[in-house]
Length: 424
Image 1 (tube, one colour):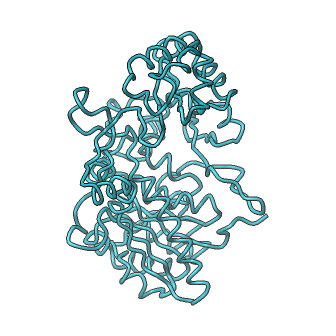
Image 2 (cartoon, helix red, strand yellow):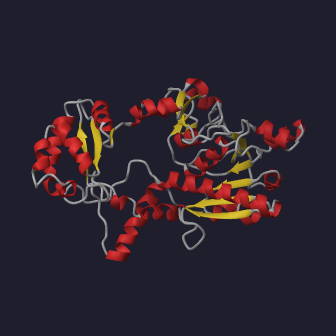
Image 3 (spheres, helix red, strand yellow):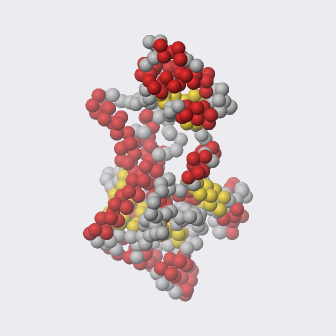
C-alpha cells in the first residue's frame, strides 16, 4: 500500500518547531524528508537539548556542551527537544551551503527534489543560498515554502518565536481569568502559533504539489505565521469591528455555551470540566447533583440565566464532583449526554485510553537508551497508510552516505575529500 506523498522529496532547512513539524507531517505521509544542517553550526537554536548523555556528547565532539551541566542521563546532550519531537522519520545530512562548493552540491540536491522548507529570515536564507529566487534557478519546478514570522514585508527580517507571536496576534488577550484575578495577558502553556502555522504550511505545500501536477510549474509559498495566528481570533476581531467591543479573558466560561465550568474532583489537584448547553443538559445535571428542586424555581430553571448565580451553582456542582474521581464524574455526565471530560496533565494524556487505543503515540527508542513517545498523525486514511515504524532524529550527517553516494552518485573519494574540507 503506497503512502500519499510517496516519491516526493523535501529539503528541510527549518529550525525549532513550525518548520520542522511541517516537514515531519510530510514525512509521515510518505515523503522523503532530508533535514540539512551546517557541519559546524547545527543545534544552536537556544532550546533544551535531548538525545544522549554527556559522555556521548564528548564522543561526538560537541565541545560547546559542558557534560557536567547536562549530566549523564540518557536523554540529555545531543538533540534539542523540538528536533527530537518534530524530526521523526527524517534523514539528516551535513552541508556547508555558505561554501561555494557546498552551494554547488545544494543545487544538485535541489534539482532532484520537489519541495524546500525554510523558516529563516530572508537575509539568513540568502546567505545560505536557499532563498526562493536562488534555488528556483536550479529547479523551476521546485516548491519553496518560506515560513517566516511576518512574511515578506517591512518586518520580514524581524526575529520571531511562537511565544512572541502569540502575544502579538491577540491570542493571549483572550486567555486567563481577567478582572481582579489576573491583570496581565496569560499564555496558553503551549505556544499555539507554531502548530497552527505548521498545519497551514502542510496544506499550502500539498496544494502547490497539486498545482504543479496540473501545470508543471513550481511555486513560491510566502507564509506569515503571525497572520496564521491572527486568523484564529477572527470572531473577536469581528466583534470589535461590528460592536466596538474589545473582548477580555473569561477563565473557564464560554460565550457560546449557556453555562460551563471546571470543578474539583476527588483527590489532590484533580478536575473535571462540563458544558451545559440547554435545558435538557441542565435537567440531567440537576438530577445528578441532587438539585431537582431548582428546575421548578424561576431563579434557576433556565441555564442562560444561571450566570448571575454562578457562585451558588458552582458550589452545588463542586459538592457533587468532589465526591468522584474525575474519570467517573465525566463518565456519569457523558452517560446522560452531557459534554464532560477529566482534566489531564501531560503525563495522563499520553496514557488516556482513547489515545492508547487509537495508537496516537509512537514510542521511539533513541540512541543511548532513551525511549520517548512521539505523537503520530491524528488522522487515518482508508486506502493509504502512515509508517508502521517511527525512527528518531539522527545525528548530524548520519544519512550522508545515502544522499551523497546513492542519490547524487558521489564517489567514495569525493565524499572523503568533502569531509576533509568540512563541507559535509
